[in-house]
Length: 215
Image (tube, rainbow, N blue to C red; front, side, top):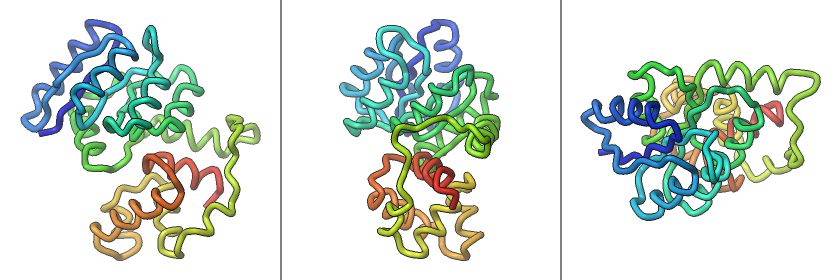
């Protein structure tokens, strides 16, 4: 059973999310939060598998709440966004969010998104992926005070670099396994090792790093 905390400040939207997730036989909503501070408190107390986090919330925004939840190792975070403000998405990426979905995502895709993140795989909605890639490809990309040094990749093996490159393309473990002709379990091992070596919190962060370094 996947245990989820839903953090959304609009009561009607939150009720809808809880209803959708509750319809899945393998998902249980164990807590509801109306602001970021409550989301962190519930994550500490309930230790869910995943927090479904809105980015724009009172008292503590979703990016700051995501950072606290991830840094304390309380749960994975799947962020919901309208993608109105790029800095929210990039901020949540750097805070360690494991995935992003748009608020207008279909019910079945929301449920599958929760399952995907719970399996340990990153998830970015296609529309968000296109926008992210456009930002990286643009002459004036979103500025980062922490631009990565290509030398950080020196700790990786050749195979780990190949896996990182695939993550940068947004491929799932199954797709990477096909691309690199290896077992899916081996892919998961490589992903885990490269995240540890690069001191990253999620495969989504790894995907961003791959894009930033152009690999």
